Length: 118
Image (cartoon, rainbow, N blue to C red; front, side, top):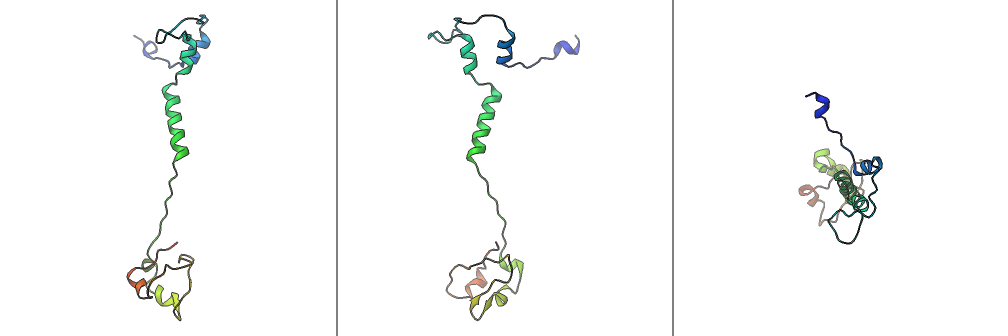
């Protein structure tokens, strides 16, 4: 057999119905008894591609992923504490430093648990 005979073309239901001159009105598909025509029942069903697209769209609408990278101030500079605490007050000398520090009992507490960069 030639290769052209083995290839199959994917055709959607809509294309089949557009190209078909058969009158399907009043013909039931046999799956229900309520008199829905075959044409109506075919158009009510979603193709696999439509179902996947709807599922993908739903996930995209509902999901937000936020990632952020930060480092310990000790990794940025070994001398961040002497440079940041002037007269017991926190002074930001680098834009990577947080604008405010969390409350701690003393400045020595920051040596064991330094803040993260922004």
